[in-house]
Length: 333
Ligand code: ATP
Image (cartoon, rainbow, N blue to C red; front, top):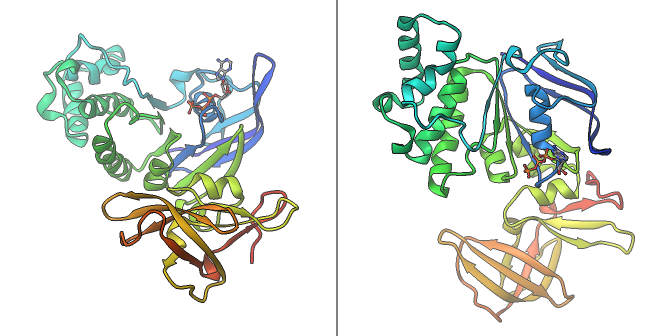
């Protein structure tokens, strides 16, 4: 197990700064998810931990040790990529034990280790198969097993589930949470998918344009977003935001916090509007409502009781409203 620390880290590509003076501590044994829009610098951070593409300045510490001059293979980290990086001509067993053969681990020890790891990731029935005969999820497990065999103190994962279909992704998310529990090792996981971040992370590190926007457990990012970006990045559909004054101050509320009715209720925030679109998703329905003031808001209802063009009233209780200053930071009540 190991903690990871970035101290005043900057990274430049072609005379362009991508990360500037970043400080971050990733806790030992935690499942940390780096999340943010495409190009925000998540992979760059991961590659700096791995040592594949070192920082331009500043230090990266693993377990308190500055690893700047330590080669990738000697850092005690293993990386799992989205394209699996498994050898197509080798069996599953050969793929998993590849690193062990190279390190001259005796055959009996290799067999035992491969079977222990195969058991952990549910691959023991497939050890003699070729990767081409496996499903996407099984291949992803081979990639995980290949990382596990190195017994790393840190697992680095770069969008490992993005090649899987939606159903399998959900299943693999649960498997990764369980794997993390079993191993108790530091996991650093990169994704642009906020649902993955919310469902798996002990700690979310939310980034935008190379800058950390918030670093907190998922429920805190959801309930107490630090700024407008965090408020709108986490949650589907995103938080509704509307101007409060003409000074760039705003207020917001989540689609699931809106009470929709055919009569005006007594709420802190009220608006009258018309349903513009209706999206029935099964357990819930998402409506887009245009208010008489011309704002378009998304609302999420458990009942599918309204229709397009219908006039409705929206209400939001005081404790479900968020306020943001002109600097876009959330203003605490
Ligand atoms: P994605 O979710 O799309 O993978 P990301 O958040 O992981 O995005 P990075 O891959 O870390 O983003 O890239 C951050 C920025 O650095 C981007 O603007 C990218 O264009 C730039 N960048 C990354 N690698 C290089 C490189 N080798 N040369 C030049 N620019 C690069």
